[in-house]
Length: 264
Image (cartoon, rainbow, N blue to C red; front, side, top):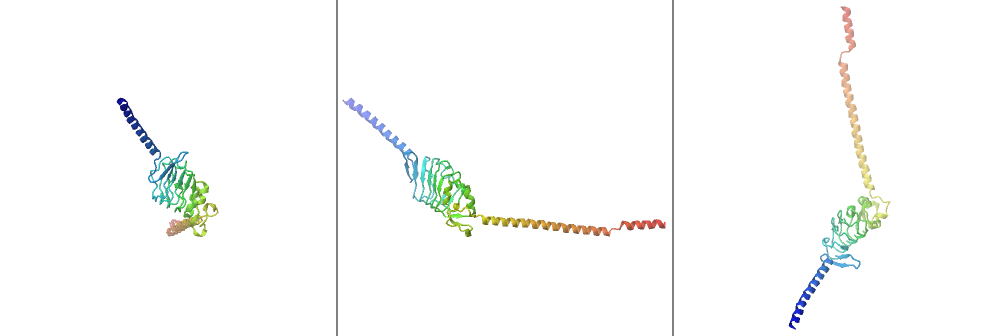
């Protein structure tokens, strides 16, 4: 009986150790599968794909520890002021990115680099964006929300819009808060829906005036050179003529020689 009890005790200890190891391994695998950015909240959808929510955390910088397999990132209602180059380059499965309700005033060139083949929706609404930077949207063809930003409509924006490959309807969110020149009066208008407005007209006029001034300057220089050349040649010709007049004439010498020979 004691042998049976001893055998059961030994096997019970072994089974407990195995069960404990199994629990630890399960916990470790679960933690690895559900790892999340610090202070953010992560969930897994039934269809697969991780969602990382970092909303309303007073963040001033984009977290660098967002898992690479994330498909949706919510960074709305924070204090972000800029999106640096390659900020999301490692998130190769990202389909949705929410950066709304921040303090964004700058998107650095290549800010969304690496997302062109996957990203479907980008929310940049309710920020402080005034200038459209085509290099920031490099290769991006997603649908974007650009509303509620203080867009400054000028010639630079007019030239930048054709270089942005976002879904065309996205650019209707570029509503002019200020404009240059002011007299054109595009404030409150969606610039894409006002194709007859030319914000580069003043720059073109300035360029035309500059070209005219340059051409007039060259023309003046050419005329001045010609006048100088003619006057210089006239002076040389006058001096040469005076020199020739000062020389004894050949006819006088011939008559003098003839008279001498007759006398002889």
